[in-house]
Image (tube, rainbow, N blue to C red; front, side, top):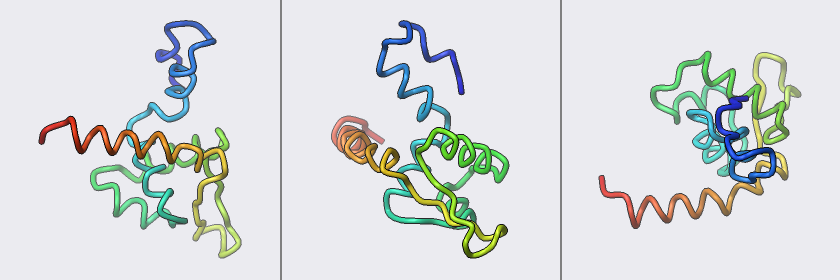
Length: 107
């Protein structure tokens, strides 16, 4: 993960969170998975502009961080990604971000 976020020491909760969800595309992947399990191709289509390589890297990082899990019961080449309890705990944060974006940021 990107250590550049942790500028206020190890005790800063915001810095700790950004270590996991601060990378480009990550929060949008979580947003999509909050709607339910998705296959790689479904995520790729919903995240217009993400490269397959970047998506694969972000999914791997989120799995390692315990935010999502990969279910390969349908076969190794057709995994399904879903959020863990830890990942679903981001729901309130994303709801607040959505609210702030809809009410404060002008297009």
